[in-house]
Image (cartoon, rainbow, N blue to C red):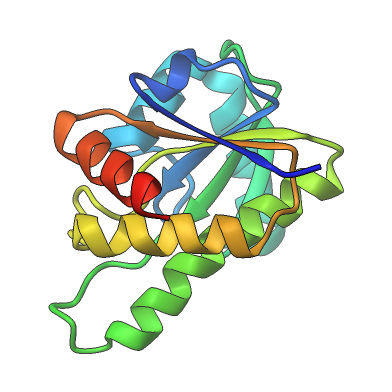
Length: 172
């Protein structure tokens, strides 16, 4: 059975899937963008679990992922991953590898936790300034190369990312 890939424009905090992915910062303590929205909508239990994870292992490294409850969100779990900060292309191969690792590690963590459906935001394309087109290409290729779950949904908050993903998925 082939994995199903969906694309929607909307708010990831409203998506009902087994797990949504949080484009977190390494502190795991919330922030702006997707990270802040997930922490606000999910409530304090997400933050409390993130604090327990930090107490156990320290900060979350770039490309790695951890899992928590979804609190008040419609999903079952939140998988937090730390995307790379785009550094003007000075270390582009490492940045591309780190971004791909975000997707792979989220998929593996979902599978380990018996989750079958997952929704991804546009990791690293906000304040971390990863080029949106390149990020979309990496996300789509990584998901297609690692068909671990039954269903993956890309959730784009803005028109620009939605258009980029739609074109990229249609060209595959």
